[in-house]
Length: 202
Image (cartoon, rainbow, N blue to C red):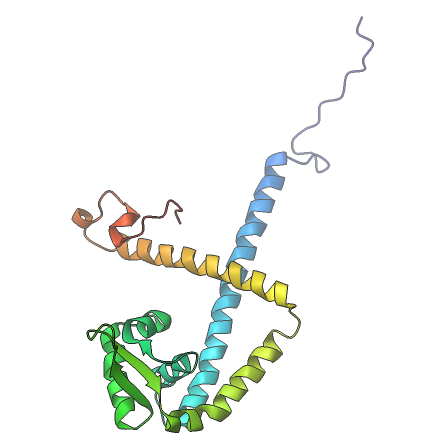
């Protein structure tokens, strides 16, 4: 006779009985909720920063894209048009047209690259530095206020994680654009149709 006492069978509708599958679903649901919240927080941060820049642009009598272009140039000198376009996520032709308008206002210089005459490089004029001076200082103060709780190592780690997110979101953008194309251009859904040869998938 088996000396081990038989354990009573618990009914699945017993409130004291927890189904492991329920716990798994709860965890996955919480994970999706957290991810969605993170996406919304990032979107909100972008919206707030955009509003601040729009206020500053209006104060200078500039459009928001023009102000962004000038602020991007304040980070470096003699920057190629295609580099600025990539930074601002716009077409190079848009940067060309806006930079010509800003050149007429005396706010930037357009010069051909000495080593490659096909490349046009942009740089801020003295007038632009003078007008942007207060706003650049406000941007620095804003950055210090936002990240004052971050140690240097934490800030670097945070930037690295954001860079990873940006690359993956870019892949999703390519996938969304690919899915909207006619079936004949899908290449069996291969995301490398957009020049992305990375093995990492969305």
